[in-house]
Amino acid sequence: MSYGRNLFAVTAASFIGFMGFTLVMPFLPLFFHQLGVDDVGRVAMWSGLSLGVTPAMTALLSPFWGRLADRFGRKIMVERSLVSFVVIMSAMAAVTKPWHVFALRAVQGIFAGYGALSVAMAADSAPEGAMSQAIGTVQTAQRLGPALGPVFGGSLAALVGLRRGFLVAAACYGIALVLVFFLYDERIAHAQATDDPDAAASVTFRNVLAFENFLLMALVIFTFQFVDRSFGPVLPLFVGAIGTAPARVAFLSGVLFSIGAGTGAVGHHVCATLLRRRTAAQLVVAASAMSAVGCTGYLAASRMAWLFAATPVFGLAIGFGTTAAYTAAAGVIPPTVRGLGFGLMTTASLVGMAASPILCGLLASASIRAVFALDAVALAALALVVHHLGTGDNVKTISPEPVSEAL
Image (cartoon, rainbow, N blue to C red):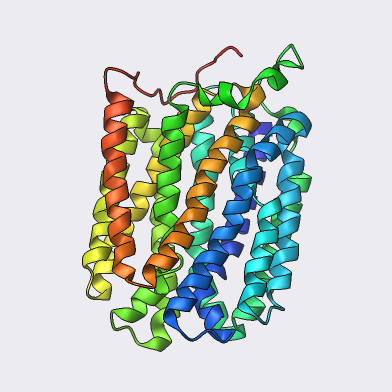
């Protein structure tokens, strides 16, 4: 079946690519130690800046790439992004200074952003009524990859070193590129083409932002990404700070990253089923409250057992909440401008991804626990906002199923 082949291509490519990223990036603080940065505060600062600069650059360009994807096709945009990852990850293996890492990540941001476009490609190929399942399947892969990546990455770092791990990551992106190039057929996407070839071009950024609840879902995506990415610069440091033996920090940090990613994948997978019983707004409120509880567990943690209890709660909530938000947004975006719409959603996501490691890395230089306190407050506030705007009398309940809307 054509839909199944396309879905397999973007799902497999997402899984392999995201796994490649998490082979090395969760251990960036440890890599900066190897590059000669000894002060914990400076390690957190460089980690935050390097993790944040790529999504910051991508956020600026994502709507532009989305426009090009609507005009020339999303497949070539994904291929462009994957090629950049192969080159940049290979170059990472040769860096000698902290600023080299930062500079390469900045360049990578110009061409990155294939994750959200992969979701759009799955939505384009989905037959009527299967959009939420297609989105959830790709996002599940984007979580399962990181679930395995840190565990493999921790073992890989012990066997061959973090530096060679970047070459393995580059190879993963090369495999993802081959899968998309040979298996995905953009001509058989189920998205309906408009009779007027200029109709998509006539839709402006403001038109897309005005779609029902689009801005609210963009806020949800921003907050979830902000909180999710706040763990990158600080988790290995926090694991060490609560008394873990130095030799076990990398392995246990990798296990925690994997648990969070794995439970997030479960959340993505079950979201389509949950959407048959509850509205997207209700799921987002539940996810926000549930993940706030998980962050509070981190805030109160004094030993590793607390972290192992809080991480699955947080990961599961972020998983089904994110898929619910993307499905609600995709349901009000006409297929002919889905590239632009997903580009704007990607910008919201990437702004959160960029701001989080930078702000939280700087905040962690004073107090690591303050990062978890900020996360819990942000998620609790989000639950209140969505409960009021998403389910209140002044705004219609968000529909979980795709709807057709005239341009």
